[in-house]
Image (cartoon, rainbow, N blue to C red; front, side):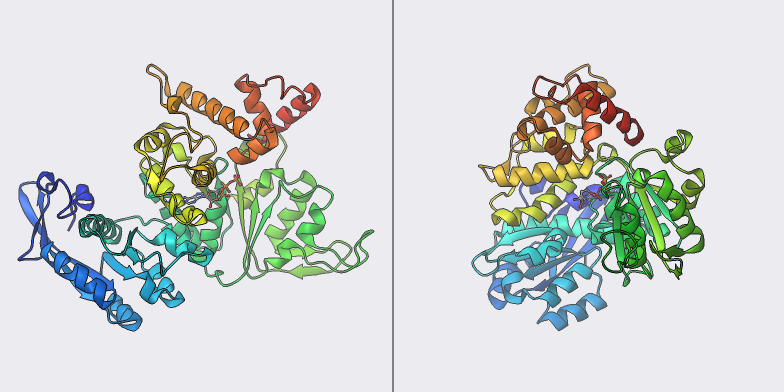
Length: 503
Ligand SMILES: Nc1ncnc2c1ncn2[C@@H]1O[C@H](COP(=O)(O)OP(=O)(O)OP(=O)(O)O)[C@@H](O)[C@H]1O
């Protein structure tokens, strides 16, 4: 059975009730949804773990609004009810049962959307609640505003119903911290799930900050190696003179300063998954050694002639086009084909239509505890600015902007200025898509530079690009002002040249 999409946003009893195409029928405890020329009747159940007082407050109201409330008497009863019935929405009171077993139980439910009721005087989120907070659909302070609860319960139920729908071909990756339900992300999630079922190497491509490392982690967590180590190595961040010993380890006395045996990162991943991020930055000399690891699953520590047999799965990521690097003799072709058995491409944020608000809200939920919930949401202007922006630094840029906004905000609703997005970021009429992207990119760079007092390295970090890429972008957008010209021109060229490989 399938329902029209707007059903998820058709709360019962909220403001504008008469204008909604769905209406509640309290006697039959159903929501009435017109589908084409006929009506569909859908029963709406909600499971609730709340104390007597809250139950008394909400039970009558929710029943009158057409909800069937299944009250759990405790954690065990909740677990039993969840096993015996498919719920799309749940209510959980945090002050009463805010313990780890509850958070675990709540986090395990895939499609069920939870609404948390809490009394801020009794329950305050801490860092250990991050995952839980990111997974909860909505929060309400006690005493409950019934009208608002009915609205968000309607939304939560609709979302849960859509996610649980047996005909839905794709599932999101939210349980792995990857937010997004746009068609591009659902299709990516579908492929990622398939990739996780094998032991084959996976090459994860995608622009900087799109979530390649998160994707690698999700593949590992879904795989049969989930209980074994996940070792991530950023090949671009290792100093060239240390890279071999970092990756392969060394024996005592292998070189001056090698006072004791050291297990390298590859060996540390034995039994689990080795994730090689920014693989294009691996020097050619080490690419040959890595090829051997992939082919024979053996390594030799520096200073040793003994081979160590390993059982590892290799995942690699790159934001540069590796085939292009192969064509330029910067990357070994044989290694490329060894790594590229399965290829996943993480879509850039600008192509994830519909995900911007979802992601922004999830990030706000994740980070707002840092200021004890001082920030409640986004202003309409901020949402518009975010939706119109090209996000050259992808999700990482969004993370940075929202964190900064939360810290700097003077009001409960973040404005475009709090996010470092000027209102004029909106597209000017007559601008082509490429023109709009270029303009947005230049605006983002200007704002980042301003925020970082024109410190190029810091601004590059904030935007999620390398320093070399940053210089190339500065040149492209003619943004190299007097303060930046302090960098010697030859250094600029070297950097820009290096970037051709990277960007
Ligand atoms: N879909 C997502 N949902 C929630 N957070 C995300 C998502 N994608 C990325 N992030 C967050 O964005 C930041 C950047 O993600 P990540 O490091 O995985 O990107 P990357 O593509 O590996 O970047 P790079 O190419 O620079 O290595 C991290 O803080 C990550 O948690």
